[in-house]
Image 1 (cartoon, helix red, strand yellow):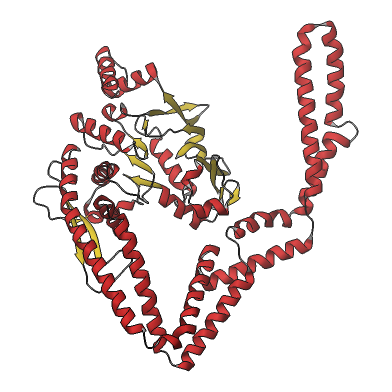
Image 2 (cartoon, rainbow, N blue to C red):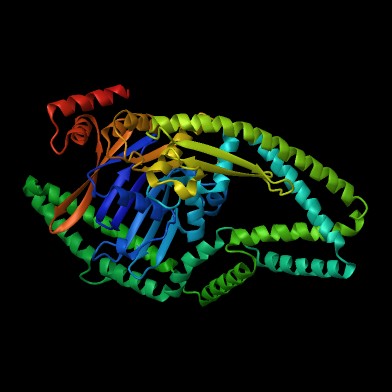
Length: 555
């Protein structure tokens, strides 16, 4: 879950912080107030490409920080970044030179890893280009979850892995002794090269964070020493001056109680400065000026870079490659002993795999027809009365994958007379958002585990609807909020009234600059805002009554 978002110098946003809750979070405000900017900021935090035009005029950089529950992170990231049981802050910055940096829990993270995590956690729908529903793999996963095929899918994947290993082993047997020897030698060489480096997950980020400190060690120590002396050691230092002020104020306060508050403030400032001085003293002694450590770090980063060029984009991929090499080596080394038994075993494995694929295909076909009917019913309620969504399941025998032989494609005919076409090529932003909302509503009631994103963002999913349809949209968003955290930008009171957390975005002008502020709405302020959404700039008695009825009807 996303707990909060802090944004600084992003477009017209100078600085603001927004808190989010579980369930449905509603974002409202006038057109152009900055609601979509908040969504763009969240996308940037999670790895989307940044734009220099986003940096607020006069600012050196923009930053976005999000606080997440630790459960939002997969085990791999939890181990790499030392994530425990408390909230985790993710930070991303973009400076005026176009450089971007990101951290998870204060540790540097590569953009590719950040983006991969963000894609798995948050799904954007509406006016954004990265929408998981358009991916065939996501459509297949949705169908399998709806069909309750979690166990069958796992068994199919295991059957495929077994068959694939036997195919690789058979190919190894086809090699001549000379060729097999060369492959064994090459595998051993590559594996030894990786193992000799003794790579650790997350190591590169730690080294990259340490490198500028080592390069600038002398400057850091000099600055720390100068600051320490200015505060604590030098004649006429700040600390000495504050001590003198505190003594004089003590004399004054004994005679005049009105100055006691000033005495307390001076004492507090003196103690705070002493803490700073002690911290600087410890820091100047901790700064490493070891040239050997700098050389060691540079050499280590060069080793990692060389291995990445040969074996994968990051350390995790290099380690994964080592695992594959080890398995391949074992296959080649055992090839001579298996020549007599491999073909019958492979035939049995392929027969078992084909049977699994056939059972999965039949189950998917049956589920596809049921899902089509359920989706069309939801789409009618969401303002697409003529919308027809087909789920195509095509099986190509002999084309085995870990998910079987099926290719799944969602096809949409939004209006009468239109042919059904792949969702990615025909759906507008509003149509796609409503299809996703319909799907999420249905899937919220489906059983079985899902690796789908846990935070859903809908940007004006209600575009072009109103009245009873808008109420239906709001009701479904609230229902999806029972199993996901939902962030929804809306202009409709009929949708906003369903929010568990209502945030209003306001754009103002002050001191010649445009600024954006946010307000969490409760009680009367929420009633007034929803009444304004119903009745225009100034709420009327009638719009207030209507707003009250809307809010009460959602309880």
